[in-house]
Image (cartoon, rainbow, N blue to C red; front, side):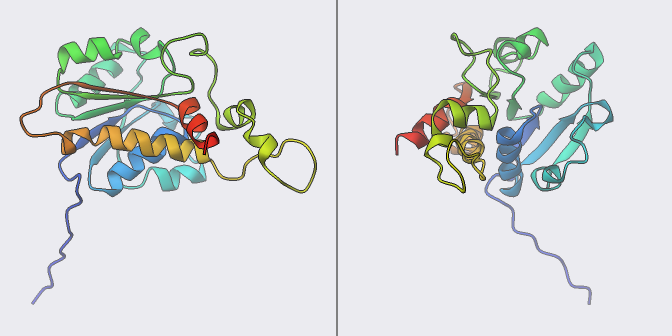
Length: 207
C-alpha cells in the first residue's frame, strides 16, 4: 500500500500575497508569510535583477512562487493587477511616491480592490522631510548611534553584524500583512500598513 504524504496546513493557508518588494525587510516578511502557509507570489524583474543569484535569496525566496513582470510597462502593471484581483495582501518597498508613479499606490489600488491589505516598507515613512532619504540598514544604524554603541576590536563606529533593523521591520510588517487572518469575519475595513525602518530602529534604541 502506498503511503500518503500528509502535510499540515499552516495558520495562513489560503492567504494570497503579491510581493512586489525588494530589500531584506520585506523579503524576510514575505518569507515568514510563506513559511506559515500563505501563497506568496513574488514579482520578478525581467532577467531576475542584479541580485537574482545572491545567496540570501536562496533563503528568503523559499516557498514563494514567482511571476516576471516589468512594472515600467502597461503590460507588467496589468499582470500585477490580475494577480491582485485574487490576492489578500500587496507588499511593496519602492520608496516614497514611487508606487503612485507606477499607478500601484494605495489610493489607486484601494479604489479597485477595496479589501486589499496594502503593506509598504520604507526607510523613513511615506511623507515628511526624510521620506526620500535611503533607508539602508547601515545608514540607519549610523544615524541612530547604534554603531557607536557597538563594541568591537577597534575604537570608533563598528558595523553591526546582524541586520536587527531589517528583522524588526519584517516582524512588524508580517503582523500587519496577516490582518485578514486576524480580523473578525464581519470586518471589511481596509488596511494600510506603512512600516518605516527608522521607527523600528528607534524602538530598539530606546530599550
